Image (cartoon, rainbow, N blue to C red; front, side, top):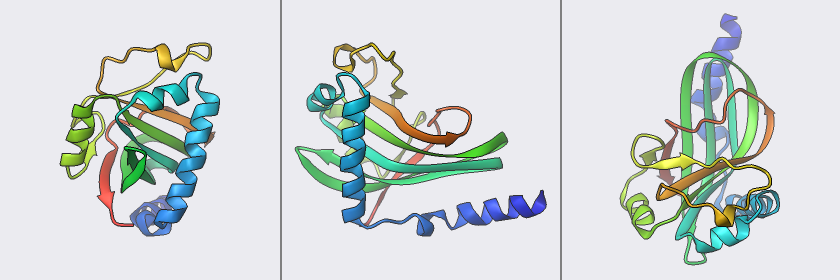
Length: 177
């Protein structure tokens, strides 16, 4: 047990360098993730066409055994361009076991939400500002949904087994790429 715990602690301590990607790889993976979002979320393409911008984390790794964490890198897009790169990190302690790979897309519905994100030096989801996790039925068209929040997060393309889809407490911070 102590050996496994030590390995997990070392893994997450080094995770930023292990999973670091260059801009071209992040952009390519983000393009693929957005296409999967369009394919798997009815009305997703129309919805993203209406938002002021979005940040997509195409590959987010999450693992845990008592102590857990997650890490991914993504790109902010608005005005039809890639505008900056960000990391998403979180840690947790509690009853958990498993590993998972998933994609996360945070859409800024209002200009105010995008501006607030741009002016911040990173934010903590669920703490710093009104980002809700989007839940919808398979038959519901996303382009017809009215969101109460200025920003909404979507978790999709999950592979692996790990309890929960929560992203509250995840820290999003700018990175150089």
